[in-house]
Amino acid sequence: MAIGRDGFDGDFGVVVSAARAGEAWALEHLYEELSPAVAGLFRAQGIDDPDDLTSEVFVGVLRNLAWFDGDAKSFRSWVFTIAYRRLADERRRRVRQPPTIPLADRPEPVALDDVHTDVERLLATERVRALCDRLAPAQRDVLLRVFGDLTVDQVAGVIGKSRGAVKALQRRGYATIARLLEREGVPL
Amino acid sequence: MTRRDDRFPDMFPSTQVDAAIEQVLHGGTVGDDGAPVASFVDDLRVMAGGPPPTPTPELAALLAGHAAAANAASATAASLSPREPHRVQARSTRPRSGPSRAAGIRLRVAALGLTGKAAVSLALAATVAAGGASGILPEPASHFVRRAIEIVTPFELPNHASEDTGRSAHAKTNAGVAPGEEREAPLPQPGPLPAGTVREAAAIDVRSPDLEARADTDPPPPTNPTTDASSWARPHPAKGAPPAPGPKPATPPSTLPKSDDPASGPPPHAGPPSKTEAGPQGDHVPPGRPPASAPEPGSPQLGGPPPKDGSPGSPAGPPAGRGGQGSHGRPASSDGPDQEPSDGPARGEASSCGRSPRGGPDRAPCGEVWSWTATPTWPSPTPCGQLPTAPRPAASPGGRSTAPAGADESSPPRASMWAACPSTGAASSTGSSTGTSRPSTASSN
Picture 1 (spheres, each protein chain N blue to C red):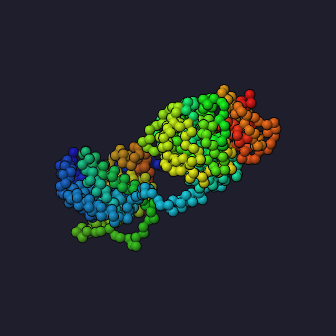
Picture 2: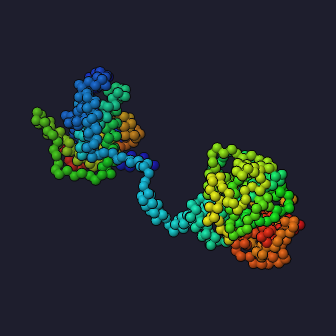
């Protein structure tokens, strides 16, 4: 089954087989298709260094690729399961260790080829992070539905909650976001 | 009763909210109420659609298909990573040195409460006392502890060194039994015992050398030696120490007269004579020594090599005053410093008072007196500490002590008071010449 948004276009089996064989093109293809979503999830969660954490996620993915068996949706769900566990670890680490305060806000890297898109993404990232900071962590976890393009059941399996709990969380999150945006006005 | 969702009419039911969420997530058309949320979801998708982040060196190596390089990079990153996981350090199995161990013990004791410290002190004192009583401590420490216990408590502990000497002397007397004289039943003949076992077995015999020496001077008791042996020298069933194969004469204390008639000694001692084997100082049983067999009349009692004077089976055996050689060729007179003539009898007798180590039925409990008659009648209910220490009258011709009237009224000194305990039987049979009267009910009857 082809998933257009994943970019595999029906070649997921071939890509995964090549990646298991250590083909560089297949590994890079997997990484380019899924790492932006994982990094976006981490940014939305307020992780200090989302790129490093994303790299850690994919190191785990590529090293355990031999034990994966499934289709593209399952692969996506598996990758975000690993990402969510890394996120949980990072949350625990932040609880144990004092938070690091950067000397200055580092702007997101902007590519020079498509400035408009990059600026738009930068602004969107800032708005999202400003809104997600007001959400509860459990409500932020439901954002997996957007970043991972997962179903309610898949999100329930990733975060370890029931289907009803996931639905309740997304309702509350939806209500909170709606209230915040209505109070502050719709941007753009 | 209204439902929960009906309280606020302007609020969407959950089903409608879920449907709106699904519409937003799938990019469908939403109303004005869902427009802000739709824009938020669009922003999320913009965030998720950016360029891939720059991989770390480890991931870059993996992406390049170099698993080995990725492993190396992983190791390097792990060594430089500030998020290195905590490592549980295993407790070192290397034995700590003495000072550090002592410091640890001090810290632990210091951490205890008052009750704990008291308990530790009591335990230490009890351990030292038990060690001194059992003789497992080194000789100076054992002597010190023994003296301390004797000073603090009314008990008197056996002097093991004296026991050794006494046992040697006793072996000498056993070796000198006249031919044809019936001996005690042979002991079970186990193999050579380890040193510790020998010591435990030897601890049964607690008669002092002075008592033994006194026995040498006494006339032989007219009682049946067989019955004497049965009453006095029962082999310990549990220990079964092998009898000494060789005579081990020992020199009695010089303050006491010596007798050249070993047959007039105390009843045959069938206690574990391993100490006799090992000599006065040793618990060592020479390996390879054949186990002693039952002594036959006319043969050396303890089965040792015959004397070199060409008189194997000599009834006299080695004379007591000759300072017979031990099994190790050491003169028995070398045991002199270990002997305490003044305390010897009391200690030897008191040591078996109710506390005969593993003596079992061989020992009379405290307050009971052994009998030396043909029909062993024991116990005598004479309590410990009430026996007289008046000058011992001469033994009756029958060898039975005749206790003078009023002997019990005398207040014995401390040493002799405790000498009235079970081994008084030994004193009764052997000490008739020393004048120790003994209210043995069996003998008096």
